[in-house]
Length: 208
Image (cartoon, rainbow, N blue to C red; front, top):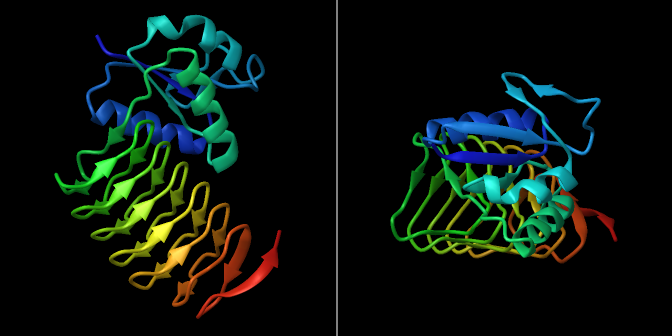
C-alpha cells in the first residue's frame, strides 16, 4: 500500500488527488489548515491540519502540497522536507514528459501537459492541464504554468512566478521571479522580477 498525504484541500487538491490515484497511489489522505471545519474534499477525507501532518509524516510514503499560492506552497514544502517528509512528484499518465526532461521533487504534472527534451522544472511546480513547456526551458521553484499556457523553447521562468491560463511565451524569453503573466497574455520581450504583465503583447501593469 502506497500512502500519500496531500496538504491543501481545495478544488486544486481534488485534481492532485485524482492524479495521484491515476499514478498508482492506493491511499490518499488530506490535511488542511481549515480543519476541523473542513472534514472532506469530495471523495477524500480531511483528517487534520499542518501540525497533524507533521506529527504523522512517518505514516506516509510521500507528501504533496496542493496549494495554488506559490509562496505558501513553497514555504509548506520546505517545512515538510525539513521535517523528513518525502516529497512526491506526480506525473499524470496522460501527460507527455520527455525522458530527457527533469521534474523537481514535489511537482505535479496534470493530464494533457507536455514537457519536452532538456526542460528543467524546479521543486514544487504546477504544470496544469494541457500546458506545454518546450525544449530547454528552465523553470525555478514553485512556478505555476496554468491550463493551456504555452512556453516556447528556451524560456526561463524565475522562482514563484505564475503563467496565467492560455498565455503564450515566445522562445528564449526570460521571466523574472515572483512575477505574474495574465490570462491570455502574449509575452514577446523579457519581463522583470515582481511585476504583473498583461495583454497582447504583454505590458507591465503592476510593479511591486
